[in-house]
Image (cartoon, rainbow, N blue to C red; front, side):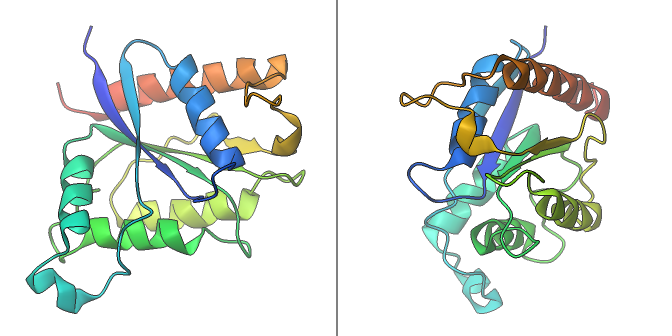
Length: 185
């Protein structure tokens, strides 16, 4: 069985981020065909085309990590009905210089996570718009809007809600099939 290298981009920098907790839950639930790793986007300088003449080492390392991945899992909160600036910046850094996008053709999935009941619906759909331009086939079903996320973990950051664990397991299994379907043999 082929194993796919999946980069996990988490759109929250908070130490106790609910998004990081969900990302780690997904990693733990992933089938053997996926090898997931969280990509650090916290140190990426704001995108400025002038810097592409001599890109910062963090940009080069990030671009290499994305380029070497087979697919991308985005786990994001919603800020002002959109994605956080740190995630948008990572997308911009990875998509440049023009014509050299590291995202091109990589199968993707989105999980939006929020303490509110609507689960980051706006961020999820706003990110999908960018993925269309980046030529990333985004998994359409199942959709993942994780609401009331502040109630899902115990004091040791362990997922305690069985229905959420079941859903996340089904989601990550569907993503494994999506990656296999959307990558050439």
